[in-house]
Image (cartoon, rainbow, N blue to C red; front, side, top):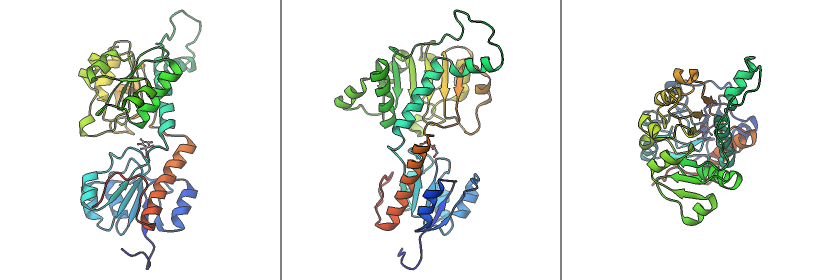
Length: 328
Ligand code: 8YV
């Protein structure tokens, strides 16, 4: 396609920072969604008709069916590091470039993972609810006793950029022995920087005092933590999920929390979010947050900018900064 006769047409499928949108509007013909409606797959497909590119967030599914109905589409730039909303093989087959937004959110997301783990272990949310409910009438020796972070064994499932950033915090900041399991083992220099030791999955489950999930979602990681895995964990352990819903079997987790099979959990992501499994809403020993691990203004701005830059470069010189697939 030669864009000398017309501007490339772009769909921005959710509300974004106005100044980032303005950069796109200076170069492209843009249909935006600053009202921030959540479109059904059908409406998304309809709005993508005649579009050359899209800026998406992690919530919009780019399926084989959608791609077939939108033959003009050439690029989808995700404002998220995770891209399990993309059917990548179908995009590659259709000649559609996919990009994600890595790196810019690593430290912010690791901060939040650590905060959620600490809130979970030290029962911050549970005790705050108790106080707000007017139930705090006296001190007692075992009131809201949790478990220590410092010196405890930090377990990490998935040791990519965010997993490594969490490991560094635990090892250097809190003196935690760090164990991890991942598809592939890190090189010895990176392991040393993170103070992390590679173990098999069962060792991770049985030895971690605080287990943090940072693995990408795929068919292979679906329910990587279910009833059998929870049964292998220490009864004093905590589980923190900042990766994706679906990695944990939420029903099995709610049962394990209710039965005190594990001590507590911190969840930022859920199967079928923004719906939350009703059993999780009634167990006290879980901290629940609405998918905000990357939510600082600076980081969300950087994510939006990176997605926009991918579109600007793609329609400028044909390159992209952070591809998730390679086109022939
Ligand atoms: C996003 C995320 O906020 O980057 C990711 O993969 O999960 C979050 O940072 C979310 O996906 C919306 O795009």
